[in-house]
Length: 119
Image (cartoon, rainbow, N blue to C red; front, side, top):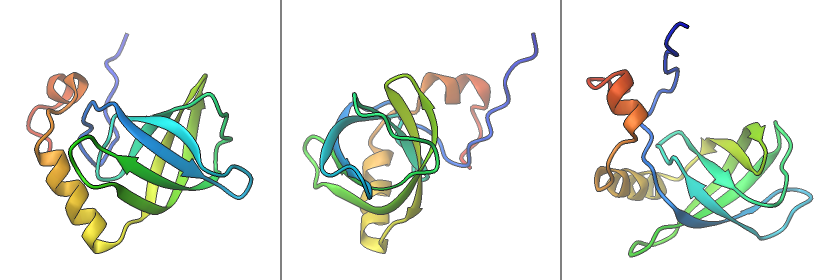
């Protein structure tokens, strides 16, 4: 079996942060933000969100200010988790996310698949 090539632009970081998301039909639902990067994250939630759904997301890291993502798209759904790609992030929110991610370890998959990749 061929090894999977990582197609992500940004390094993922394993986290377990509280999050709140909303869409046109879902308001203020809680989820767990996981696999966080500058470009998106995975969200675990009992609420099913269909692919291609536009959402707003607030990430609530422990010991840091919340980060608000005003525009994101659900890219995939697997069971009770869904992958989110950030579409828009204010400059101050992007800087806060960058600072937060610098403090976190990368995922094991990122380290083993391409240890030199920072893309």
